[in-house]
Image 1 (cartoon, rainbow, N blue to C red):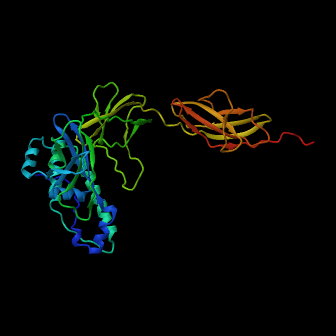
Image 2: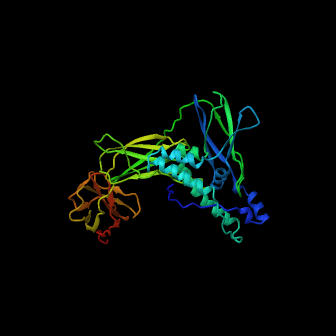
Image 3: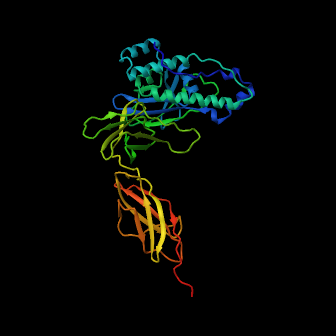
Length: 415
């Protein structure tokens, strides 16, 4: 088969590389506890559809090599019973599934990726271990492998056939409607280094509609629109579609699914985002947002309409003269580029008693865009008078000159 182009990191058999004391330190470190998460849904007439999520690559590898065990109990009972042992497909079954797909289609590529990943997981290689680095070296290897694992799981879960072939999917058809069940999963053979801590998953055998909708926030900028939405526990691998003004069809505009990875030690919420640029200002664009659930289904979770708009302020006015020219007159003069920006609309002049003060307008109406001077007759004697000039464009973007203080001439003769 054609190999997927990926660089895969192999785990090594640490028990042969570490002395007993170091092995015990690892096993007693909660950082090396792990579990298999489960998610599911009840499908009327079919049963409980489950997905398995090993929490790191080492645990996934252990399950792919030896198989997974799923246990179940009723919520009112205490004891779990084993209901199935799952193992990955044989090569013949993989090839049969691949033959049913169009070559180079997304399902074809994901199935091929899963086959390649399975093959490398079944052939682990050893590696050199630096005893001086100790747990730090193990932690770094763990981080590298977990990143590789996340990228693979995000890809594989987009295609249900891949999940089934990797033994990460199961349909429990021995359930009764209305009953509440508790499931847990483990690997047949324990992984090296890690200690599996079972993580029970409770679910009711009742088919209920899932609300995937969520808010998408946007900012309309100059010839572009930026979008942001919060992380969802139900969806991943996001796509954005756009319908242009005057058109009827939506077209996907992102080249690859959108993912944002959380740093394991960070408590900050994860937000996903997308920037759509090279747009035309003041044209209304329509958007649809999609994500994939754990069963590989593409779900539309939001729609939006937005319009890019001019956010670029005009050039900054340059004050060329500020002078006390008469007892009750302060003259301001300024200049702009020649010619100025075509969307220049007006000027305003403001005054304050300090350079970073609360500047107040000193005229009732905006000054015409052709204006290049203004005379202030309301300045206050006995205090500092600072001035700024602001240029305003037709979109009401504003640019502000540097503030300057006028030197008042003492016009009162001596006694």
